[in-house]
Amino acid sequence: MQAVRASWLALWSSRLLVWVAGIVAGATLSVKAGVGAVNPRGLTHGLGLVGELLAGPAARWDAGWFLLIARDGYQPQLGAHTQARLAFYPLYPLLTRTVGLVLPLVIAGIVVSVCAFAAALYGIHRLAALELARTGRLAAGQARHAAGWAMLLIAFSPMAVFFSADYSESLFMALSVALFWCARTGRWKWVGVAGALASATRAPGIVLALPALAIYFYGPREDRAPDWRIEPERLSQRSRLARALAGLRPRYRVRRDLLWLALLPTGIVAYCAYIALAGGDALSPFKVEHQVWGRHLTDPLSPLWYGISHSFQEFRHLPTTHRLHLRSFYFLAAGLVATVGVLRRLPLAYGLYVIAAIVMPLSYSGTGEPLESFPRYLVVLFPLFIWFAAWLEEHPRLRIPALAVSALLMMFYAANFSTWRWAS
Image 1 (tube, rainbow, N blue to C red):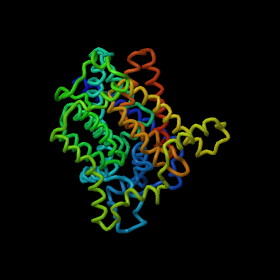
Image 2 (image 1 turned 90 degrees about the vertical axis):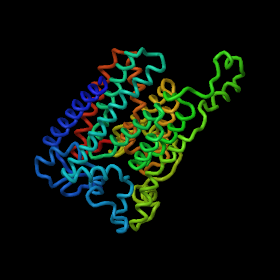
Image 3 (image 1 turned 135 degrees about the horizontal axis):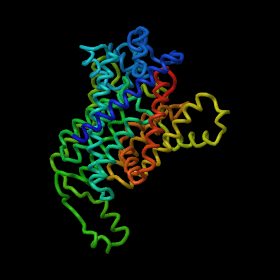
Image 4 (image 1 turned 30 degrees about the vertical axis):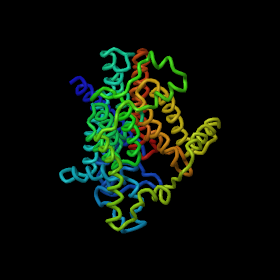
């Protein structure tokens, strides 16, 4: 019940702040869709003066694609006219369409996002309290307190506007939290279901197989004790190489419940099969990333070098687009620092998940702006916020300033998003 109360408080207070910032910005600033923005009538504009003002914090930029899919489907048989839609995975539009049977689509998308966000916040509180108490560095009461702060840091994070917008961020985060919780508690059937749904929500859902396997073989697990355990006294007597090899040995035997993890990629497989049956190319969800959205395979260090090299140039001499997307590098740099903290403080599965989820978009980035939208990719990586909350628990004087700065940035980006200015 403590988690329920805390998640409810974080939910309504942060969403109220997002909507106030968005509505005030929409009423006082010019609102005009940018070049290349999807702005379908009746979904993101043409809603009337009050309707468009209220929809501002939800129905902008990629929300147009999700709402179009929810209304009209993918229509792959039409070729180039609908090809760009195939980059957006189907679970969120499907849920929006279902709720849209009784509500307008824009509101239906908000309902799906907010409900998923509420579930994610509750799960993060439970998961953070479990993990931070397990390490022994925080007492049980401190771990629960830090869990509350982890939830607040996510709810008021700079990119938190996307958690209540017509986007798939909150749904994906809720499913990833569910997968971790079910894996930690040994519910492997539900791990497979959550992973399958996550892979039908966003392409990075497939990387959740890595932490699921790590928890299965190495733990920590609440469902049973390890099958193999080496006593610290015996381990200390071995050579460094022997200790390293011993650390690689799985702690849990393979059982039949491992087969449930085969469900994880079925979301993507089912989506590709649907596209093929509807008259399109089964591989088009992957091909459009290059053909339409200009993304290509590269080494993950190139986007990093892009950000570093531009950071040493005078900011005022950079083109406007470079200034906007240079902010993404600052978010990425903060995310990499937090990743080190996750690897040091949380179980290995969390660090592997964060690393894989960062490397994947770095390795498949845009040609012109390789770090485009990276802050939005980072905001769903909840282990980063769990580590930050644990760090703030040990530095209590910084808690309020950190939350205040984050909330102000959230309001800034919510105002940008609502007025069609770049927010990620």
